[in-house]
Length: 143
Image (cartoon, rainbow, N blue to C red):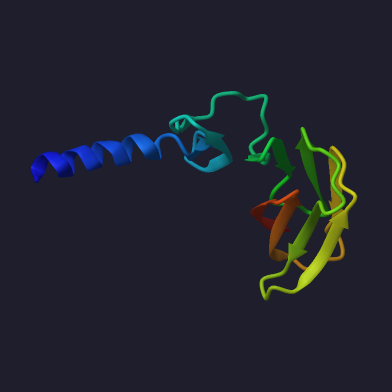
């Protein structure tokens, strides 16, 4: 019985390392500055030492596309860059307020997409990015 349990435990731990694994980067203060979903490898976390990358840029992988969002928090405008995207009529960025009300939608996405937040109140918003059949969700702070 013990041998079966150990065998199942080993099989489960080896299978869990094959799937999607989040990878996080942190600044010197311990604040998370970015995340990326890595397929098929184990996660590595560490302190970010590359000073070329601004701390207010966040990245994520959605399918074959890499998404960068900056600045966050934002005062009047936020940029969403999508590398490796294929044109798809259903692609869109939606921004919701804390009550779940849709406050902004952007379709016809390109490599660099600017969202104008100047008409929105200060607070937290939720951004949903849909590319093909994949979605990613973000928290956006409007200063």
